[in-house]
Image (cartoon, rainbow, N blue to C red; front, side):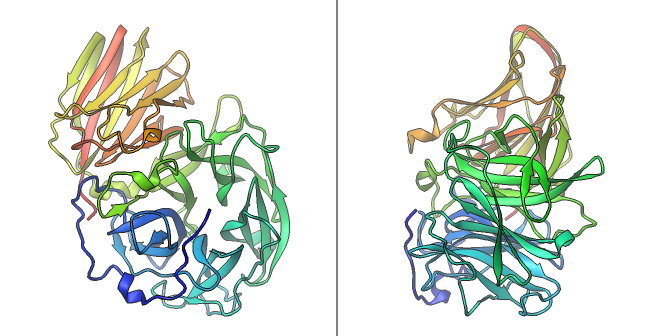
Length: 496
């Protein structure tokens, strides 16, 4: 991947202050983070400190397509309403600033100060190397380490995206690093001097593309600590880019995956990539909180937004769930903080649908965004279809194939579809990981996206859409059979 490098610039010229602010422009998400202007991709440096969630991200301060990679920055107290900050890290003589992570150095292991916020990132010049920068004012300003890089390139074309955490049991920092078709682990006592630990490889040469943006973190299941490894990659099940995961063990030296029918995917839609979790979440919180880039490299530079390009998924809480075949799945649900911007639930339909298309009056008119909760039960000889549409005829379809345990999402006629054919190849499928006697869908609809969570997030899909206006009409279709349906809706206030 080539890069355009700014070796020097007046940072004030590219800060948000004084720029055009229009959070009501066409396709602007109203409950998802997006930049005030210009291009973003991967979330970076996600860290919590003193009541604030920090979201750094790959950012182009000069335009709405990929290039000039820097670290943009936003801060939130609730994971939803974001205060956009000045750009924090610009390209330098070592190259563009690619993806990475941030930690809080509570014990001053690096010598930058107690509770310093330390960013670890890839410098992408002629070779990709790992560098660090530090902040002693809670992320408001950063100083690049004078002796960067802290890890030289050992001769690899792909050597990037460091994700770092403190491993208590072995009393050291551990880095997960993308190294082509593998993840390489490094260890350090001080964030400056790193040593090779091990390498994790699962597929012998494929069938998946380059591994990117790794994240290794623990989750408890039935009182046992398990480790989850996220890996973003190409050749996803529905085309383009997506994120795999492995569940297993980590001893401070190497990661070992438990037996499971890999690949397992965090999200089966087309538009959830490069996501990782926040670091330094208080132990009393007990959550692993995830956010991803809501786009796909197949068409990310062509999406038809104006003034900005790119957004993040809704933040999610991750958990482990036992599959009936005795392996662990990674479930995800939207964080509970979503309640702070939500209206009360309104029941819009409860009843039985038999061999018909039933129009459901949702009672909402051009809302900023909304959530549907739909429960299907007592399904007999039918594959129910949920159709969301607007007065212009834009439509998306969500179809359950209960015989084969699949959910399909169809956006071929969802609105603006001509900007890039790769955006609309057909229907996208995802598994339904549970018994089929009762299916629950939570569907989050924003101005340019639909996120579907199946059975408390055991499987999900995130997909971009570009309708002429938000979908505010709904049909439920039951052909050649019957089903009991219970539907509720609630509207969200805009986060802007």
